[in-house]
Length: 315
Length: 267
Image (cartoon, rainbow over all chains, first blue to last red; front, side):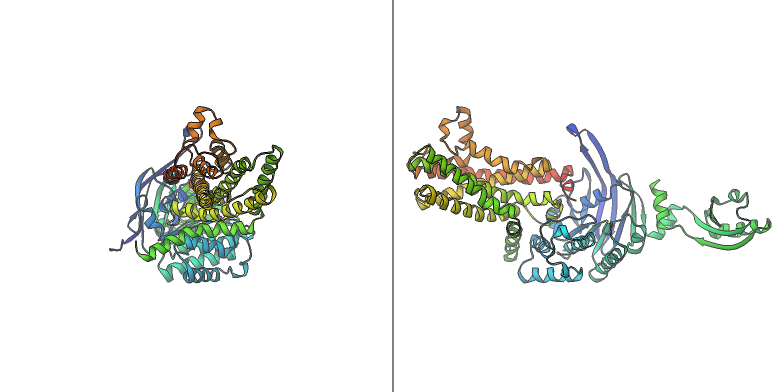
């Protein structure tokens, strides 16, 4: 069987939810979203609340049927071949929930059986995952008594039961302590390195996306507004570089009127000038300040971070 | 299908049996379902037959209905639990993310339901026999086996319909898990022959398999059956309804994937 070069391909996916009396109230969650994810990539979906991230992920995970458009996972259509795909994908959500009275090993054994694992193979897989996610000390604890971090680790363990080729992670570090988040991020990275798993993750944490993802798509109001690597996105969005200056006297009048200066903001002792290109504008700014006898005590240039790109796009 | 796939099919089916068994073992609520309510039903109805000074045959007529209600109720609840556990814990999507099909969840949980139904029958037969002299195999062992199998098939149909309602309407339909069975057994002539029902209701009763299974076992206690082959008719109807109910649940799941309710019922 030929191997599909793309793990995930979505074309013009649209989904509208209908609710209320006679289902008259309509909410368009996706309005023609398209994306292509190569095998083995970690792909991030960023966007504000209600942007359509979870809807897109749910369609790709075969949990939701699209109104129009098409999508394939590992070459299989998500609508027609849902059962074939389900053997090869899995999903974990930030607010995962399992049957409350079950203990961690029982949760894994139940879902392991649904993936067709049994006997020694099932016991070995469950044991491996309990150990890997450090759940062994909690074998006697029922699910509803586990802490949020442990629940999250169990959700990730469940998501690896079938050794998925494609893994969907919906806000995997939502509400977790920083140390647990770091550990989970490292486990996500390991998965790709060790097994070549294709991972699509949604997150609100820009640092997480920047650290983990090869490519990122920004989604808003059901449309993908921009896509690329973190660096590409920063260049694409062109929100400018920031030149931070410590001056004496503090803020000279007229700085904002210089060519290429997009905005000037005073932050404590510093002045932050957002410019279209620091390479082009910094010499002019320094010369202008020097001509006016302003002393430049410190000067730092930084590119915008992903969070600023996100804020710009979400506007 | 290769041998390994058959094994995987069987394992998927037993997953639901595994979960139902753990839940049954761990929750005191399930012990009540299995012993308290059936015990109370058998004792109260048995005492009623004493008060009314009924003959052993009439006592059997009533108590067979009591057993039918409890066995069907317990068994169909197990089928409904395949979906209800996930509704209550908001974990519905995880099970439909796996390559599981309707027959896995229905038959797997039904197996446990059959086991629990047999326990209920044995307990009620024991109480009925000891306390009220009810001869629980008086109708003949074959009739008893066919009757119980008929009750469990009826439970499978009701359980599948309850699952379909819950998947379609969410928690609003949850009460149907307890209400549906009472409605069906009332129409099937649980404590009376269906001839006492109004004509148009009798037409509905004639379409319910349990009517024929009750008819079949009561024939063993000397009550002439309304149809020539009550068990054959009951099984034929059951088979038809199992297929229809299976289709209804599959259609409900597809609709739930379309409307997004499957996701709303999760997390």
